[in-house]
Amino acid sequence: MKSVSSSMNQVTFTKKHSTLLISFCFLLFIVNLLVSCSPKIGEEINKRIVDPFDETKILNVHFVTTRREMTVKDNCDTQSFGFITDINPHYGICLVNIPSKHIIGDISLDNAQDKNQFFQFKGRINTDDREFLNKIKSSASNEVLVFVHGFNVNFDEAVLRAGQIKYDLKFPGEVVVYSWPAGADSGIFGQVMVKSTYDLNFTEAKINREPFAKFLTDITGLGKKIHLVVHSMGHQVVLPSVANLAKQGKSKFLSELILNAPDFDKNEFELILSDLTKSSERVTLYCSPGDNALVASQKVNGAPRAGMCFKYSGVDVINVNEVDDPVLGVGGLGHGYYSSRPILTDIYQVLLGVSVERRLFIRKSGPKNGENFVLRK
Image (cartoon, rainbow, N blue to C red; front, side, top):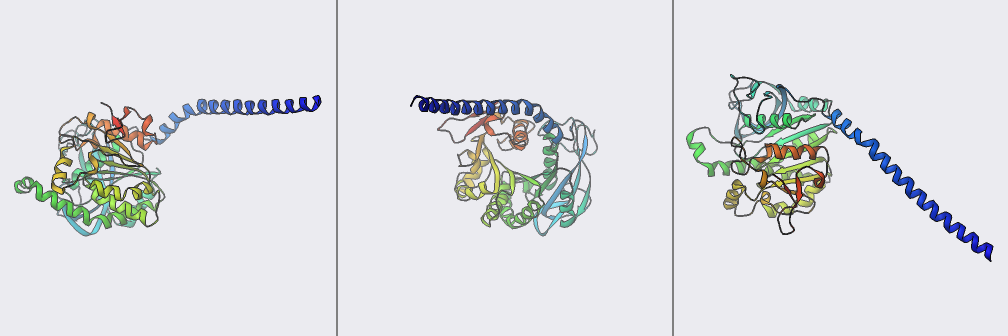
């Protein structure tokens, strides 16, 4: 009996010893993995950022627009595309000089001044849809950033903003601006009639849902990692289109879906929320309760807007009110923060795949607040 008991004790000891040994070895493996990988993280980022974007550059900004073509057919200025929908989308590339000395968020344009201080248009290359997609597909980078602008933005401003975002994010892939017919008549009457401009833009945004869905289907079929960045009323174009594609059975066709100040009905947003989260690896929503443009939109539409800070399941909702300081008019209404330094710093980390809790300058919000997180000043 003693020998049996002794054998059983030995077996038990061996099992415990083996379990401890396995646990210790696993711990050593994890430690070695972390130590060996830590320098590799920097190496991977350095490999990803091929171009340092540290000097004035002429960048390609790919465009898809449903705006009606105007008089100028070889440039990207205010006379190139208007603010009424065309049946057939136009495709091409705008060549944009990005000045190394520009202030983050500023897109001052002047073709006659110093190229190191002012944005400049350097020409336009027109393509058809097939050539457009082939150019995107042939890019050395596996990433594409699609930018959709908001209310009252002319074509030239949309292109400049896309170029600024690419440059300031040091984005290694191709940038595409989808420019729907937003904007207003440049005359005094058109500028004063803000309400009529809003209504017209809202109608045009809804008309563009089907063309945008077609474009999104095409570009997500290239096998690239697609990041989609949207601002303001552009969500009227994008969100129903994305949700419908998800309803049709497409899933995770977007990598990062980044929503900035969504001018979109809160209740309607909640109705399509599950489809939006199915469409993307991650959904990030930047909001601000101090967004005067969304407050005005709420009065016009009679319903709260999704960008006024509410919690949504499966969405990283980040309140940016603390960092929304007007710089050269950017953010003056608490609505243009998406192209400012603090937001771009966070988006840079989003595109690297860093989880929200581990990103710089992010803190958790209170349990009774609308958002999950706050971007610190």
